[in-house]
Image (cartoon, rainbow, N blue to C red; front, side, top):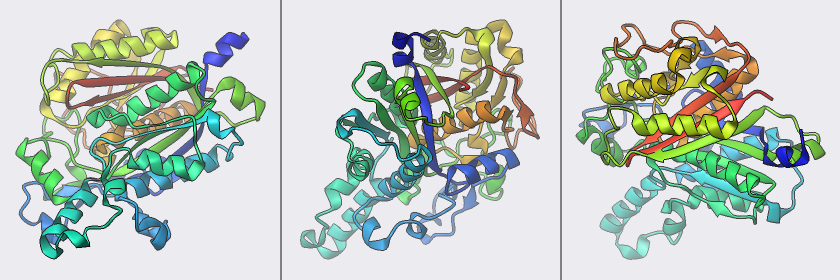
Length: 413
């Protein structure tokens, strides 16, 4: 590898997560391989009148991990991001890096919505003088990124891409660009979300986006199944530590995988519905492969966006077949939202971690609840049990309201 090529290579040296399946990466990965579900019935009083009364909250509440005083001035989305970032940083070996060469890119689709709703309740019930002075830093969408940057002392830039359910993946794409452009040696990147609350759930339900399979929570998220009726809202955070290959080699870092390419496009079709032809999604995947110097024949695994919505799953499947062509039959596809629910702005980052681990361990998690596959999908979706993977590359797809499409390409270390 020439010095110029090595400088462009971005490696993954740290992984961190807190999800509906577990409070760290190891428990989340074990849960995915076991086919566990993080979805449960909501018993809170505020959920009683909702059409959808199921969700996938974090398996380990942040209050069990963070000091109470430390957590008091952080929105739940910030708490989750901090927990995942600390794990990722420790996993990377707590690298010694010039603060001016360390950047942070942590995304969120909605930001501190729970803080906003709680502050509004305080305003109405107790008056304006009782609103916390911490409210603005807690509700602003860049709050999680700022929290992580303050924790690590990052001075090369702190960024927050907001692209709905594609946000976490776009954060990783931006982090790759920062390293490739020479603006940072190390970037801590990912996504976080904490929106399991009455207003977001009522709003998603009003769009008929949520599953209403309230009597069977663990079976409600069923991508590609004929009986799917919407996604299940989840919460959590996924964070990766990315480095230039040169920086990682210099310090002898352990490498989990290579962030080889990314592709970003937009549909310009509808504010919420995907392009049914999957044209924008296909272009994103094609650009990711081109950026990585890969072809369809190199791909052995795909972590699909597959939220369990009737239209979205089929549109993505069409896009995948368009890009992979005759090689589609040889690609093991998984839809991990069947177990985690949909983590919105954190989804792309958590699924990127699952993709990296699938390549590293050469095992694809199975898609849960796929009892009666949709005839229009026509993909080799992994079912029932995890499947061994051949050596090769993988794609991780993320699409968001607004027509955002992001695809990430990874190869093993």
